[in-house]
Image (cartoon, rainbow, N blue to C red; front, side, top):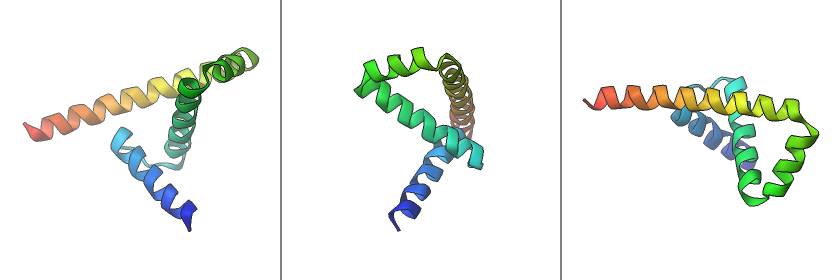
Length: 83
């Protein structure tokens, strides 16, 4: 039951953040949130992971850029609707 509630919250977060609730987008949002949390709370672990998996680090950078671009578009659209 709790998984369903968390899934619903993550789906809504993805919608509000990026405007995209596809399965791929939701999975990328989950990775983004988890990676950011680890990087902030255990930066040594994030640095270690980055050094072990440089291709993973590059993929995470791509995911972050994509999420930021989508978020920028969502914010612009919301601003246009307010005007």
